[in-house]
Image (cartoon, one colour):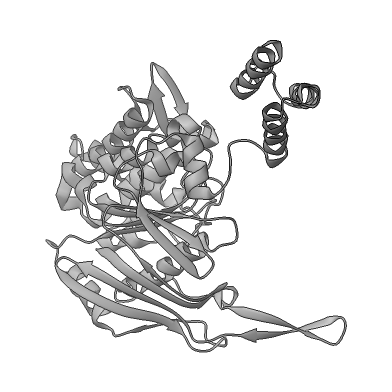
Length: 418
């Protein structure tokens, strides 16, 4: 499955917005409050239309908080609410050579459920699930709180008994992670491997995908993940050091759980792909892709995801200027309230240029920039007394060893002595 267009109406702060998407990697950028996360969550609700056709799979519905609401002052100290309905998400997608368009909508704030029209996409999903040789697309939404926001497991462990491959869609479009479900699957695979006295190909492929991803991130080989039966935990190994993944830093956990979540769902949905499970097609939504990541990792994360999951359409949101220049052929979507601008990434530009071009900001604080401009103006006027005072202030308030300050001091000393 691959999305080409999404239209959003009355969802959160979005009145009516259409977004064009491309195959491969889509990166949504914009200032805080401009609707990046809302776009991802609206798409997640829209994709719930596919899940609505599957028996035994809970889908995602619109919540009351997601209906666009105006607050109207009544009297001096009270407010009334006006809810705008219907709230709608219209998706256009390619599914194995066929084009589908469907609308997920909520027509009343009293309704707890969402409708999907037309039902073609639901019937297609049902048909695909009933054909064991048909590849099911992976669908995943990874929210900004994916490391710390864990979904409470209320139901029984579905992997204790025989299960259908559509279990791979369990909680796939909710913001909170379900690491417990992932661990239960790993335990099941370990039990089968022990019973059959052989390795399970799709399980090994999942662990290999995570290890290779970390190889790409660190630019060196040898990273491994495995399940420790004694500790009953997933472990991370590199350079003879072994630690539970749950005890790693937030940055490591963010990366490892992200890839593990995608890969294990691929394995559950399409176990017949065995060692090739990472070739599964589908859509992955990631909010705050850069969260918890050191800039060194930010340079690598897009290429690493594309290398490990080459057939996935990624739609991610970020603030990090590094990401805009870190990889070629990334479709950039700039969100500014009702205005949407598009373009491909400028691979290899420096971060300062990226901040200026893509984020409309500068590499130094505005107050410092103002002093630098004043210094240059005084130097042009040959008013060295005022220029010297400004330079002294800059060196007191900032870092004298900064290359810009060294450049200004060199100019001042050279021109004053001339």
